[in-house]
Image (tube, rainbow, N blue to C red; front, side, top):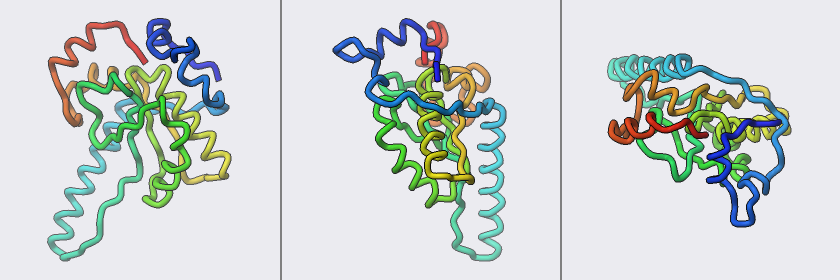
Length: 185
């Protein structure tokens, strides 16, 4: 799977011996599906609306059942994980993701997650690579109820489109600086 990586990102992503960080892991075979930020926003807003509806219903019924998300957002940034994340995202840096994909799979299965949506700075390198590794593992175990996807445009695309909407830890000053720089993965 030939993932395009910007040259300046390549320079930053090299190990001491000059090889890229991902060279220590197998090349992914899968080409993960892409999901646009609008669809992710709709998923997030749908979950919020469902939670609000369930809270009202729980108060009326005094039920103690807990809400389970059917998707998981994974931010693959490492040292550049600044300025905030899309709401509810967990940070699993790409550089250490490959050995943890089996654990992530087990956690997702246990939680009833149906899709894992990966993103990085612009979703042109780390996000697609991690999503592909995850989809490879999902395919390897024969799973049919879980899919790995990539959020098109990454966090930069999200912020360009939605600003601080549905963001955790949004920092306007950081984003003004980041969005003025050339896009990175």
